[in-house]
Amino acid sequence: MEQGKTSSKKYRKTIITAGVIVVVILGYMALSFYLRYFTANVTGKQEYLYIHTGATYNDVFKYIQDEDIVKDAGSFDAAAEGMHYKTRVKPGRYRLKEGMTNRRLINMLASGSQEAVELSFHNLRQKKDFAGFVSKKLEADSASMIHLLDSQQFVKKYGFDTANVYAMFIPNTYQVYWNTSPEKFFKRMYGNYEKYWTPERKQKAAALNLSPIKVSILASIVDAEALHDDEMPTVAGLYLNRLKKGMKLESDPTLIFALQDFTIRRVLNKDKEVNSPYNTYLHTGLPPGPIMMPSMNALNSVLDYKKSDYLYMCAKADFSGYHAFATNMDDHLKNARLYREALDKRNIKR
Image (cartoon, rainbow, N blue to C red; front, side):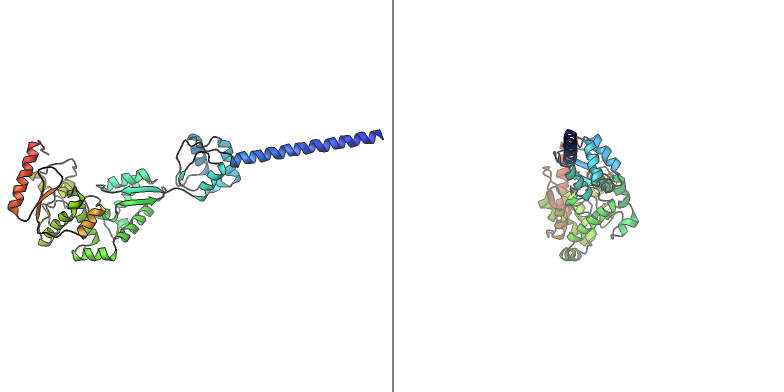
């Protein structure tokens, strides 16, 4: 009888011990699960996590370790395995917030829920300037952008050539995903170009005997000439008058563009002899392409130009940035003399 009681006690003790072990194991598993998925792990040392196109999970994990994105890289790796993220890597620019859990971070990365880049551009002078600016904001490098801008075959698909393709870019503020490819970026920009050129604007351009591309080319000259927006419609009207009369535009900014020396403050007579299609002292009509990215104000100023009889203009001698306008050569020569004297007085030779 005593032996039976002893065996029963041992059995109960074994059951209790086994139960305690199971509880401990389950508790440990629950704690490990909680720590792996639901504990704050993102450090906040980096504002964004950039995942390049073609990156593997190993690339992402190395970046996370190298940049101290998380406090416990081991728990992130285990969570990534458990959530099957390792085969679902998506490129992009992901906003990080201090205290994010592994679960929240991985859900964001696996779903591709990236934050768009705000891309705002205007008044960029040359294609290389534009490509350089965009490459600082997006994943694509400037070389890939320039390659497309200089590809006759590519730009022809959108109705442009390599000289006038710059007219496609309408200055504005855009929301663009960081990993947008150059091809998709150009497609997006063309979409905005088409939105700008409404039937009403196309009608206005046709009334001026200009295509939308030629409006952009003229607007680029207006933008380069007019320092003040309120003067743009008058400058545009003057150039339209010259075009209608078959006069050369004789625009100093086009000459500076032809010379590719943007430090010039004073155009000399010898400069007017440069052999370039952008030399409007030498050639009648518009140059083959924009000399800078025209602003929205400049584009609208051409379409809604101010009517006048002006045919000549010269920078004012007070260096206010405004122009002295004239309807005849005699008055223009007087204005030009005053400006030359002001340049000499300031010892501006070039």
